[in-house]
Image (cartoon, rainbow, N blue to C red; front, side, top):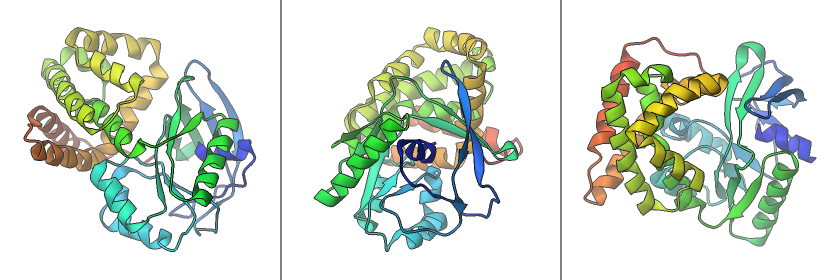
Length: 307
């Protein structure tokens, strides 16, 4: 989606894949209240070309362990900004900044799902959503990131620069994190109303993580409001009853993307949140119970195809 927006804004873009795909174009589909679609032609390669800016978009656990080492090996010679579109928490941000001083953190405000069988990228974005880009050090890097902001905005992704992405990004991620874990535990939103244990675990974990998030940084106002609302039992029950009826496409996306597909990332983030809570002398007992429920669910069902 970011590649398509940059191309529409006037930039020359190349998509880099870890595996040979054979694709030269894909269908870009906007879903939700302002739906639409168009065919996007962008070169796709497995080689990492020289570029003014490199954007990285992989799942959180793919920045860790062997996968993270392989990615770092490809990026370590880069001198131009490397913009991390993937979610990272505090330790992840510190780790990558120590190894790649030119890393620029971000807080994307778009959710996407890739359908490889029909070469289609579906995305959801609120008209009010704004993607935050960290302001880097150095005049040359700052000029490039300002240009990136302008190109994204021209291409349809509202973006602005921020000096607090390193703290606000993790805070926003943590505030809403239990909802994602709950979808991994039961990825049928419509059935949550008949699952009182899940409702109880989720509302308690949301209250717990909202407290942690406020200690980390400033939570995005929209996410903060949603996390508060879903931590109220009656509002959560209303959400699970109404949203699947009114927004079936968004519901199907949430159930797939933030549920079982991201279990490895959930596991990684939960470990870091619990570690941080312990450092504060706080307890993450409700989040731990929710993660354990998701682990049991993940072990009992077949793996989902990647997207």
